[in-house]
Amino acid sequence: MTPLQPVRGTQSLLGEDADRMAAVVAAFDRVRRLFGFRRVEVPTIEQTGVFARTIGETTDVVSKEMYSFEDRGGESITLRPEFTAGICRAYLSEGWQQFAPLKLATHGSAFRYERPQKGRFREFHQLDAEIIGAGEPQADVELLSLGHQLLVELGIADGVRLELNTLGDPESREAWRTSLIDYFEGHKSGLSEDSVARLQRNPLRILDSKDSRDRAICSEAPSVDQHLTSEAFDFFADVTSGLEAAGVPWKRNPRLVRGLDYYRHTAFEFVTERLGSQGAVIAGGRYDGLIETLGGPHTPAVGWAAGIERLAMMIDAPEREKPSVVIVPLGERADTEAVRILAGLRREGVAADMAYRGNMKKRLSKANDSGATYALIIGDDELDRGEAQLKDLATGDQRSVSLDLLAEAIA
RNA sequence: GCGAUCGUAGCUCAGCUGGUUAGAGCAUCGGUUUGUGGUACCGAGGGUCGGGGGUUCAAGUCCCCUCGAUCGCCCCA
Image (cartoon, rainbow, N blue to C red):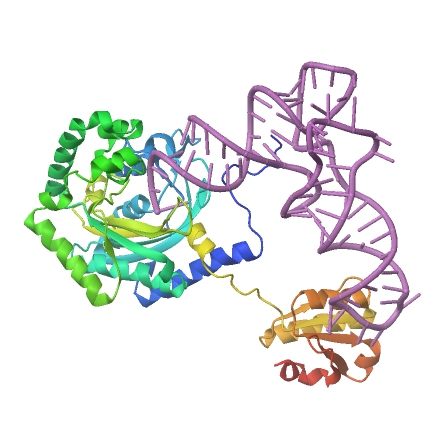
């Protein structure tokens, strides 16, 4: 393997592909401001325990997908595989509790050692939104509304469906889990090999198996609804009626569960058919117990993360930035004068560039390729008269303009 | 971690059952035009055929290993 080969599962993007990612982040930034989510910055690396303790030791994410290493001081460090745990660590160690309830947003890269495929990378990028210190169902509604409005802002809400479920409070969840294990033990011989393994580690996960054998068995499996405490039932009812009021369309999926151990109550995914098997573009839920497992006080919270690459694949291509004018200097005096003019135009807010290589043909061709509206030709003859030739690149029309009135002529 | 398909120029690809110096389009560069782009025409550069090993008189083509990509599974945003 040559050292020039990129690390597997990483991407280097130029032009439109990079613009798409930036457009997703820009849309998120507009929407989160509208909703009053405050921007936070958190580290890319944390002590390994931050993730190991919260995400769940038995999950694949912790047991085989984390980028963990020992630093030079002998401490075990991990590249974040997700945002939530690190944000909660910061909430505790930075004393953000004083601001609770807190609506927070961030974005950046995260890392998982997985087999790359469409919409899945080893270094990937997420948008992340969390509401910490709010146990009310209104917080869930607000967070889901934020997700929905983001999709609207990106112009892809039509192709995405919100699937919603409840995992219940710890009491409900535990009762459901027990009855699921009983049920699946009774049908063990009919389950896929994967699901037999899940029976030990994460029985809830059998419910969203894609295997047809599992699906048949799951259709008769006990539902959460039979195990919900009345508090958990009421909570979910408040979330769903809130969504109706907010005008956020949703669909109940009683088999939707979450992969990470910290989730309680509301669980959801915004899913699309357009991306193949990596169909979840935004996913999350309520994680009331997480901050306690980090050693903090009981603190209810909800959050979601969105895959920037996945959203970027779905949106229309953003328009490429084009200069209004490209300056084409010809001659030594013109070269320095062009720099002066270029700087002046930019100071006045005119998107301007300069073609400084090759003969005139080359330079005009460069101007044309840039998509500019005008080329501004500056030669020694024009300079003597304090003028330049302004050429409309679409029509080919060309006229003399005074150097003093350039910005006006271009605008 | 498992399965399948694939890897030829900067990009998209052709190269039939193994057979002379591996091709095309686009892009790049030069020219037709030493101060006029977009169109057209002429020309040039650019390839250890992902890498390594093997079979064969002969391998881009067949076999094995390896790296990577893609699509599923797993996992998950």
